[in-house]
Length: 337
Image (tube, rainbow, N blue to C red; front, side, top):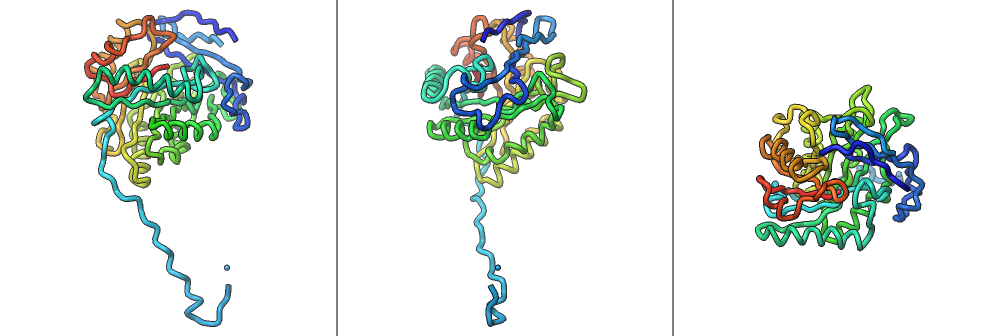
């Protein structure tokens, strides 16, 4: 398969849109290149325009009384605890069905784990005051080029894929992030769809405003957005999950490369003590553009925890580990696509 790109612009959004109906639970075998998937790619040019590149009775009265239910112990309450107090995260991003969506489509199994851990070790050497932990970041709800029968421009990855990656990351002492592009679906309902997976200690959530679309919007022509009120509702869901499951703080990653992608950003709540919100500076481009965007969206804005995305294929050149660690503020979350 050949991918042709046109109009590559500084810090344009890049995404792979899987053909509607192409992915089924039966299709997931771990051999992504054998899955018949129609691929489309959308990127932004320098003008911000999108370019498509493809029950028993008894005799006694007493016996008829219902037995008292056996008490079910509640999870032991845990105090709030942010992983970021002691850790920095290095994550590999993407989807196993497509190499162009990110490195999760280029490598699988032990080799994928080896590579992300090797990348994390480079940051560990530069950040002795923190433990650097590796993570995998799966695009689970993938925005589509066509609306589909439900008009939501969205498809979801098979449960088998998600649960396989949850076990793989658990076995390797890694973290796992589930990413929602949302399309025209309700972002809070999409978060509720994956809430049961968030009960795992090491599983966290990400949302992508770029592909969270309003009525009348489509992923070819429009950059989507999320507002603070919606983000706070998702925080409430994660707060409830952490408390009920008795697990540590949940991390919520929000991607951003344009100001209008997050509406009312200062109103994103910071009082959910079981949720750590990361703004992940997204977008591809050269070092100067990346640094200016980081300053604009991270350094100069009310951000709780800081993140940056790097593109192995599209950043020319890719910021070095030393350059990333030298950012002010130093990012808590570093993602590679």
